Amino acid sequence: MILLSSCKKTEIGKCDDLQSLYSFSDFPIGFAIDMNELNNDSHYYEIAVSQFNSVTPGNIFKPYYLHPAESYFDWFEADRLVEFCQNNNKRLHGHTLIWHNQLPDWIMNFQGSQSEWELMFKEHIQTICLHFKGKVKSWDVVNEAINDNGTLRNTIWKQKIGNSYIEKAFRYAHEADPDAFLFYNDYDIALNETKRKAILSLLNNLRQRGVTVHGIGMQMHISVVHPENHQIAAALKELSENDFKIHLSEVDISLNPLSREFELTEELLERQANKLAAITLLYKEIPSRYQYGITFWGVSDRNSWIREHFNRDDYPLLFDDNYNPKPVYCKFKETL
Image (cartoon, rainbow, N blue to C red; front, side):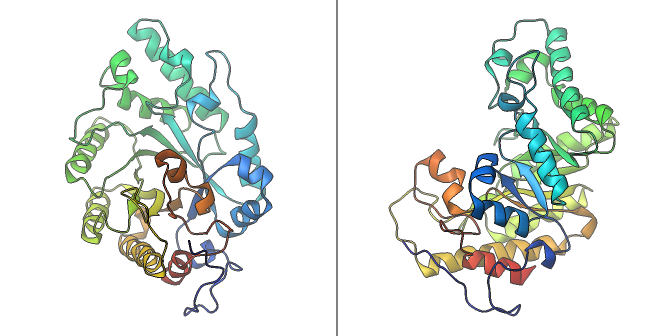
């Protein structure tokens, strides 16, 4: 393993993390926050405060954490995050109101008619949106509702409420907080053209029905190989031409997507840096009104979800295991 403690010089001077990423950018630069790391790791806290001006809660806004019992919402950690963002002038992007994963047992086991399910669904969305009104700038209203083949995923919400649950989710969120930007968020939007066109068809149809949908979150859990840059360019062009704000919402760049044993090399780190640079340049080409920002799914390789979820060696983020800036950080800052 190679852990780099410094990066080569760039046009902006010595590559270190003394200057914030966001100070070089015309659009917000964010990260998915882990409140346990924030509260217990001073290096993590320092980078969180100094480098980014947008924050997405990695887990604590998901129903399992925020709404653990039918008649109880646990606001404690979420309100601490709001306070952190307010004290440090960070934009807060809410993730996520409706998803088919990380649901509490009471929702999975909820007994009721379709109308009772819809009432529960509405109360869940609007209680959260009202609680954070004026504090959360934007929401991933619905997350990962489309299958890879372009069909509607058979989630518990679809089973109990019907195909219209996505429309209702956006309507309820907008009713509760008319000032919040509302996003649909999903993965493989660049890689999978069929899925992308299905998402655009769905959201454009909602707009034609008077539903407020401001933007699309392209998750961008990618690798140094896929998707290819021309696929990313095509996706950014198509989404912006359909008048959607684009949030590169969950960016990480895997070096070991096939979960093999491998050696971390300078060449791999350079490929990672070049991949993010290419993405950034493509993103900068779309009109600024559609640039909602680039958000990384974590801070350091040591706290990336990929290692635990896939049980593999990988190094997908901007900072190494010792919180030192990697070549990908340096190249990103230069490209901004």
